[in-house]
Image (cartoon, rainbow, N blue to C red; front, top):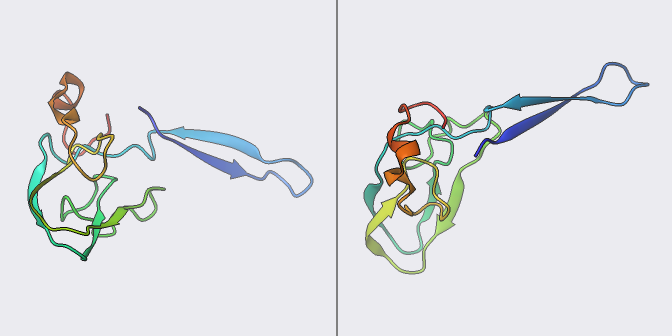
Length: 115
């Protein structure tokens, strides 16, 4: 799944904007090919890295700035002592792992690169 960043560039005030499509700019990077097991506390605010650029995986460290992406923020009502958070950044159930990391596409991907 390729994300698109659409940039409007005005050539002049009188003209309509020209649309440029930059492919892959917003695609998350594969941070790891397996989920990370963490303990999640109740009533604590978390920011899960959705871009794959954070050095504090699976949590956000602000590295997404300028990428067009933002972290997935969440808070739990109950503690989860053994939660598995996605690090391949391809999950359909963020921030939790859905097993997508086990696919051939993710396993053959290069760490630190988009799919």
